[in-house]
Structures are given as C-alpha cells and as structure tokens.
Amino acid sequence: MNRTIQDMRANLNKLERTRDRSAPVRDPRRIREIKARIRASGCDSRQQVTRQRSLAVPPASKRRDKVIVREGTRRVKPREKVSNAAGVRSKIIAPPPADSFRTMCVRLCDGYYFPMSFSTGPEYFERDKQACSAMCPAAETKLYYHRVPGEESEAMISLEGEAYTALPNAFLYRKRAQDKTDSSCTCGTPVTLANLPTEEKAPLELSAIPTPAERPDAFADPESQMDLQTGLSKGAVRELTGAVTHGKVRSSSEGNREVRVVGPQFLPDPEGAIDLRSPDRRNGR
Image (cartoon, rainbow, N blue to C red; front, side, top):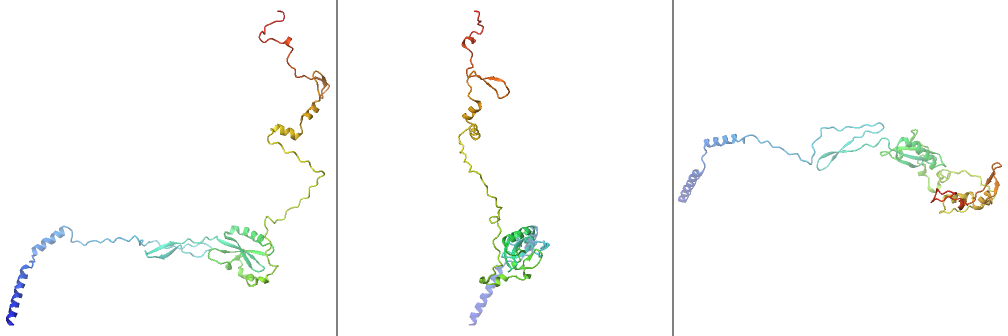
C-alpha cells in the first residue's frame, strides 16, 4: 500500500514539472512593448458610446403649454396630454367658437319648446324671434338660447337674460297627460306664404261677350300679320281709292285741284319712239 502511494506522489511531481515547463514565461520587456504599441494606435483612450435616439419616442419639447382665454368662454387648454405605447405626445383640441348658439322657441302657456336654429350667432336672434312667432301664432311665445356644445336645453336663457327654469310654466307640458291637453294652449296653423290672406278683387263686369280673335298664321310674313290685325284688305283699299278708270279726271281731297289718273300704259307711241340703233336719224331724211 505504501509502495503505491509513493509511486503516485512521484507521478504527481513529474506532472507538475511538465506543467511548469509548458507554461509561458512572463517577460516584462515584452509587456512594455505591447503597451507602447497600444498607446501609439490610440487604443488606450476610453471609447465614447453614442446612443441613437429612438424615432418612436419624440424628444421632449422645451415649449410649455399655454392657456387661451376668450371672453365669454371657460378656460380651455389647447393641448391635452395623451399616453400611448410609443410615448407621450400632445393632442391639439380646438376650443369651441364663442358665438355658437342654439335658439329655442318657447310657448309660455305650458313651457313647450322646439328648436329654431341649431348653430347660429347673436346677429340672427331677431330673425329667429320673428320665425318663432310665425310658427306658433295662436299662443304667446318667447325666444331662448343656449351655447353649443357644452350646455343642455334646460340651461337656456331668454334674450333679456331670464332663465327658462324661472318661468311659472316651465316643463308644464311634461306633467300634463296627453288626454288632458289644454285646447287653448296650442300653436295653431303656422303662418306661411301659402295661407297668407290675399286681396279680393272686384269681379270684371262685361257689357258684351268679346269675340275671340283668330289665331295668326305662324308662317305668315310680318306685313301680312299687320294687315290682318289692322283690318286692311283689298276691299278696304278699293273703298279708299275709289273705282277710277284711265284718262278720267276726279277732284282731289286736298283743295280744288284736278288730278289726272295715269294708267298702266306708259310707253310712247311707236311712231314717235326713238330708234336706239340709229339715234342720229332725223325726220327730214
């Protein structure tokens, strides 16, 4: 047993010596040479790591959110923070216009109301007031309005600034049953152009039945149409001129002058005619 232990120790010592011979020798000169080359190449400085910003996340803005305040409106922030998976971004919300109103026509006898304009301005209130009276002529009405969006119809006020809820008959129409409606509290027939009263004209009295005129010929010339309208015909012309024969003399209507009527024969006698072929011919030859 002891023999075996001694052999094993001898083998271990042999292996350790072999290991020491195979291990590299630490040469200080070689180490200094390697470090000098590293410094000459600039590899000994600290490396600067540039981090690339993700495009999904926008950079934080230095601009602060502002608050826009308009007269007659509540304070509204034009930007609202919205969170999403990519990051935080700003969502622009436009404030409602200050002159957007809904006008309501209110029947004062029971508080019933119906809309006139869904989105209008104060410059059209007078127009809606007149239209309200025309839509409900049988009852007393009043024009109310409220802002849109943001307010309900129950928050409407009159043109004088009185709230609808201050009316004695506010929402009375909701409390009445349908079979117990007040017949005196109705709007009646709206006033429209179709049912406006018209002026009655006196009937036209005729002493005789007029004779219908003959329809003019569409293909006739303008002179013939004028002759037909004025009653000018051959017989009328004959009566005006009279039956005049050739060579006779009749008195003129203008003064006492005698006028000879010339007939259709206007050429001279053949014996006294001039020969156009021989214009120099004389009677003595």
